[in-house]
Image (tube, rainbow, N blue to C red):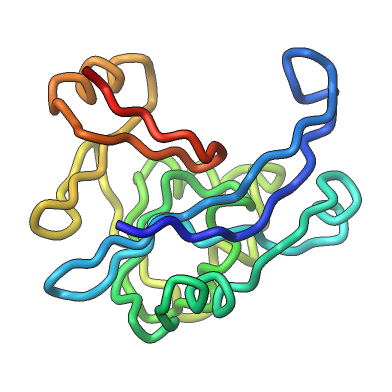
Length: 175
């Protein structure tokens, strides 16, 4: 698995617990698989509101993949943890590949115009594979649904060697 650095944005203090602006990395992960590379999250989308409110510094999809020696054509599938603008921003550039996402997440993104950028979710050629709960998207690649705190117990039961995060460079190495 390789970390993919898509840049960062500045979360305004009004959205943080401490009331202070916070720099947040936008990270994805590329999992090498015998059937091709699976990209977990695709970076940050662009919109005038996003530019003004979050002041992002983006790394393009091609540059981010190039930094780890990969190309867009190497990506055979995408998994979006959710469909906020900072997780699905380059989905339109990966049209034709299956995009795995929770069914309730896709429904929320399509029903609430303030949830994300509709043009990122319903761009031409996007092919969604909807999950309802945990699901194996390729042999050995398990996606956990995280709608409530029960996922933490499930994660611990799986006894992972490492856990990576979308907005933190830290890596959790349990027990």
